[in-house]
Image (cartoon, rainbow, N blue to C red; front, side, top):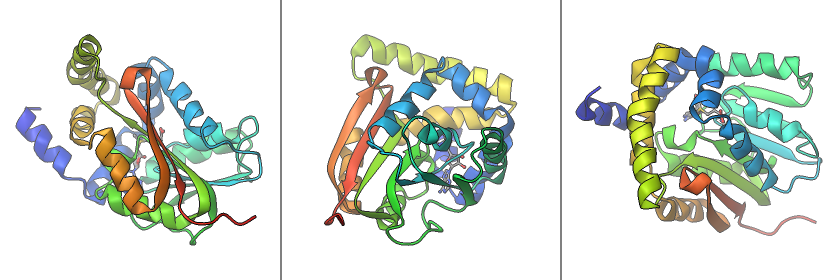
Length: 248
Ligand SMILES: C[S@@+](CC[C@H](N)C(=O)[O-])C[C@H]1O[C@@H](n2cnc3c(N)ncnc32)[C@H](O)[C@@H]1O
């Protein structure tokens, strides 16, 4: 795909198009995730869950839940009591459901089809919320962040993982080369879906830098917002707390 076509396709984040793209790559999504990140994606998710300081009693809302890797991670150790995962791609959710069943977690993890910009959950229903590698795909991330704030109780914790661009000059050049040249080719060969893996680097390049995205979180109703670079800034972990007085 030429840069022009990639730019146009990355600009089109209408829900039908994005959901269709994830439905198409769903069968190979987990495999590609682990291969393309050399398995580090599991550590990034574990780090996001750890940042929530869960005690085993909380309800966690996982937005852009995909194949339920965050939900399953949150149920390990002393994680969440209950997880509600929301995603609009039916094929991703179906794979997630079968993983949840295999893990014997059907009673504790519910997966619901819905849009991050209009979450199908009640106000203040969640004690904590996560979004892993989903927010850059959402058509209006500011709307999704406000929806997540609405769904969280005051004092509820948020953890968002999203790709970034490393700042160290040598690392940045190597990373961009891998991201622009190796990843799309590998993705195309394994998934058979060229556009999706050209979309990935283009969507990361157009996602706002950490300082700007933190402002979006503050405007949405979060306080104590921080951006923590992981793996030299390949990924950022954004954390925050829903504003308001927590109930005792
Ligand atoms: C890169 S995958 C990440 C999945 C999972 N969180 C993980 O860590 O593997 C992005 C997911 O976000 C979902 N998604 C993107 N935009 C969405 C939206 N507006 N509403 C709901 N789901 C969305 C896609 O369907 C896809 O399953």
